[in-house]
Amino acid sequence: MKEEPVVTAATEKPGGKGGALGGRGGALGPFPGVHLVAGKATFSECVCLLSGSLSSQPAMEEQPQVQDADEPADSGGEGLAGGPPQVAGAQAARSEDRMTLLIRLRAQTKQQLLEYKSMVDASEEKTPEQIMQEKQIEAKIEDLENEIEEVKVAFEIKKLALDRMRLSTALKKNLEKISTQSSVLMDNMKHLLELNKLIMKSQQESWDLEEKLLDIRKKRLQLKQASESKLLEIQTEKNKQKIDLDSMENSERIKIIRQNLQMEIKITTVIQHVFQNLILGSKVNWAEDPALKEIVLQLEKNVDMM
Amino acid sequence: MSVLRPLDKLPGLNTATILLVGTEDALLQQLADSMLKEDCASELKVHLAKSLPLPSSVNRPRIDLIVFVVNLHSKYSLQNTEESLRHVDASFFLGKVCFLATGAGRESHCSIHRHTVVKLAHTYQSPLLYCDLEVEGFRATMAQRLVRVLQICAGHVPGVSALNLLSLLKSSEGPSLEDL
Image 1 (cartoon, rainbow over the protein chains, first blue to last red):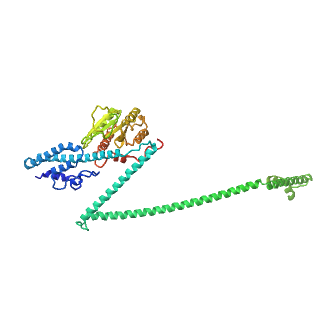
Image 2: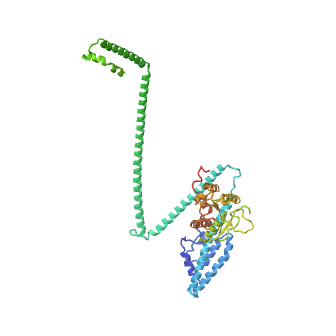
Image 3: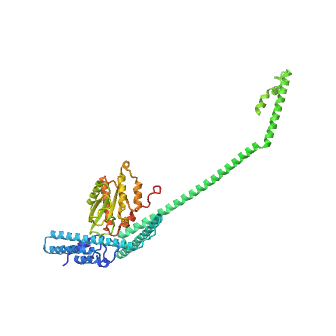
């Protein structure tokens, strides 16, 4: 007797991967343990498969639950055959809940079994007995963590590749049905292509701009360096000049020349004073003669000049 | 027993147990209540303790997650936590221990510097969560997070294990060199 409501409820569950339970029952993979029974299997068959794949101790705890689940299924079937539809609906819902519960428990037990197994494997590995320094321990921890990360990344890549393969086979199967002119898929593909072209164009533009920026920066750097070297040259020249000037001032020859100059000036001044006194002493009217006037009034100028 | 070990008992079917260790009873009680209000497919059991070691007379289920609640306002709570940490087996720290720092909101009352707790969490390679347990909204969010972490640690989420979660939660830099 087919228990219809239970089977349809089973096939309505979201996120399922089609495939018989028995085929996957042995593998303990990290994939979610929810598997749908495809099509025509009955509820009781499904339950037997569930209890068969549970190999650990909790399987025995589940047996009474399995038997409980059988009963409402049967009564659900009987209720449909000749009872009020509301009662049948409620019991079908309850068996649906039990189904969900069982599947969830199965996933849980799988995960817990995996954890225990990994702990057992880990404890079998020999830990190094020697006392290592803390830094070495930390370095070792980092290495192990890196290993874990690498394995995770490899797994993710493989999963991605598998998903892509699945997608491409699904696409291949559907392509025969799709008309190439009008369908959502073709629209999506065209949109994708346009977006990709846009992306490539903008990437090219940004690359060009970056190149220009780089060139300008190079030129600026070169200019800066040139100006630096020029300034350095100017400074060295100035310094040289200053040094030359200083050395010149301090040289001996200049001192001697200066002394001579001073002597000459003194002599000239004395001679001038003599002339002036002569002129004044001779009581000549020196204001009338311009040459005499010049000699008398010249005293100030000479002294100022030095 | 004097030392808590993570996998010495078989797990209860569809149950997940969390142990909250902290000196502030009222806060722990409130957090426990918020957690029990959360919607969760598996049965939750919350155990509260002031400090470890736990008395061995009680028959308790396997503990899936330990949360050490450190109150940043009191140095005694940090001391208590450090003492209790000695009674936890090393294999617990593979993702089944979590530190929760509360009271960071009121900076003026904090007597423990934040870096102390950060260093503690870094030494034990466990995640550190911040939450002001006195504020209702934050407490509810934290309860949600803890329930989710608890489910993963108890093995109720297929495909994610406690160790996996730990490596996901790890921040890329530890406490900065100046603090160490």
